[in-house]
Length: 137
Image (cartoon, rainbow, N blue to C red; front, side, top):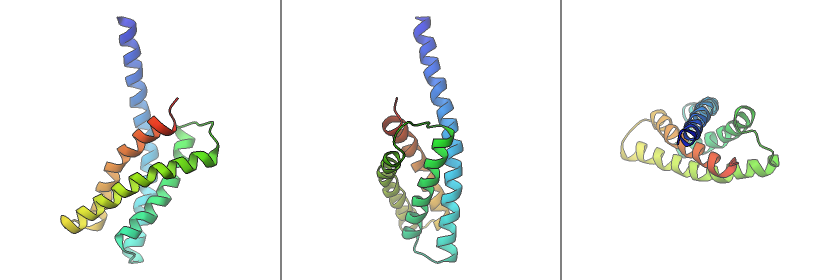
């Protein structure tokens, strides 16, 4: 019984460590996403849906690079892995756009606040999918 409990605790600690590392990775990608969104939205006056999409594309690449360097050590083919990341990220982008649209058009929140909220929600989707589908052992 103690051995089973020790294995369970080890798994929990491993998951917590991975989430903490992904918070670091996600923070770097989030900074990229928010800066790009802010520049496109506020300075270039690009519609928030297009600005969200462009920022998401760039931050997904940043997330992949940082994730590969910091936590998801992969032996996969680099291009195959990158294609998988972007395919999975399409769902995250759609969630991001839906949250942005609801927050801005239906709830009346400003663009940047809506972007921050959408990023926070989609963060968990990205972690779970990458852990369970792309980088599973």
